[in-house]
Image (cartoon, rainbow, N blue to C red; front, side):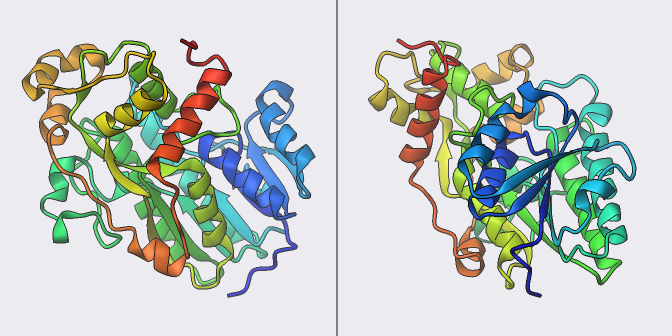
Length: 350
């Protein structure tokens, strides 16, 4: 199925961390981007998008839309052949998982994809899912083929009370595939990124990513980092993966987008060499100690038991073969990100 590069393209959650770099990539291609946002009349919320639009050869148009309002994406989607659904909350500090995570993720996905069914121009929908829809805890990876994440595996261990963020991503992606398989008008491609790092278009982002970078440098982790392995993807590479998923004819199915298997301690070590004046963690904290203090640092003891001390690995070969992806080195990602946060004053310079 060939996509017309001259037709407008819609992006949900356009002011978000991942969406910002995607919008930039689309604008630099010369496309007209229909940015679906909650407050299109708020210049402060849109200033970073406007700044990149001014420097690009593309055009940005804003449309009011809300994940929980049925039909609110119809106007923004009009005449678009490609739809990117990136909007979904990422926060670990939540009080009501159903209201703050599950409802926006599940109802939002349903809302966007049901709108795609009503807009005849739509040919492809790209949904930003997550590696969290593949696994719930690092201990799960031990039971997977070759002890690594792959596109064939689904998260079956998360729930409303345990890893609710991962549960929300799993429910939303399953719903996306269910809606996609019930129609023949458009093709669904999902992007499943690991932990997203790197400089966004807005250095004052509210994603959990920014919180962790601050905690690493402000002394919160000076006693040590949790012995947790993660996958890392640069937000700029993730934007490129989204672009290719929308416009490469062969793009299909689920796609793990992860550049490097790493750990919090490795990231801290890279930053310590480049920015030696900050109190980055130099070692890992014993698991039993994290288990004891878990409630005080916003973690459950179950989360500690099933994630600390386990190896983590993801197979990104499909993204390389079918999307033609190449990935930045981890050092470039974390150093560029830290420099951006430091220059913006998000992290106090030392």
